[in-house]
Image (tube, rainbow, N blue to C red; front, side, top):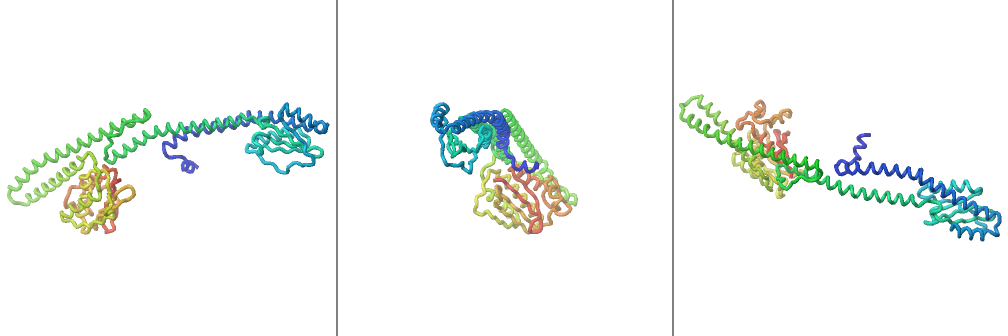
Length: 439
């Protein structure tokens, strides 16, 4: 039951807020209308119907007492009550009735006529908008009486309904305008948060809307500034440390080159080479993160550039672009994204002989798939592979090159653009890296 109710309730803030306002008002109006018609309106109509039924009974009685004098009595009665009466000799009562839309109106009039008339009768409240046709069976024919509608039914009930419906429409219109204005601020805040999550510029965003929404927007802007400052500080520190470490590293390499030959020197040279590769990755990461403002760029072109650079380094890469000739433009940090794709290609080239890269559009995103035919990574260790400095030495990664930052940097860059990098089984038999960037 709860699931069924949830499926029909609105999911958006606008719909739910409108429902919160309109539903109680609608319930209140239904209750008010019910009470009004059940107690007040029907009571008033019953009294009016009783009065009209009494007049009808008087006319029937007057006709039956003296048919010859009835025309004069009917004329005097019309001048007094504006109810016309005429006798139709030889006619019978109609066999069918047309019920009114509000059956309560017919019910009160039928009850009043039944209490005041002894013989059969018939009436119609629908044929004439302003009048009611009442017929009573008498000796030799039917006495037909036409009464004004407001003598039987109080018009205030319908006026009340018109005002009630009109007020409801006006209230709904005003509610929609105010709620839209409030929801617009929440939507703008959501869009700004999403854009910031994708690493895009939100300089045009300003707090707006209700006080609580403004406070949330202001807190978001302060959080954004703190995150930006932290990222800038981390990037600057990483670049500075990496750069400063090159001086003692170069000095150690020079001293090592002048040292006598020996096994120890080869081992030391290997350690220094690994340190240099680590610093290269640090600096590459720092340079990519240093691009603070994304610019509109074609992701397909960036992917091809990364593949060409990897091919110049000795990797054989088969490029399969389903979006060839299609512009896949999006606001991105081109250098960081190129480094992300290059890391995926380098990782595939290090452990596979056959490498294939596909670029394609997938809904509202661009997907770049990098496949290899290497040993792969067990499913339970794939998330672990994104941990910085993780080597996974046992199966796939003998770490012949790199220091375990490639996949970590790739995922960090992808998530900085609002996307992600995931690892899957490859159709080539090895590992597939799926890079997804929203456009």
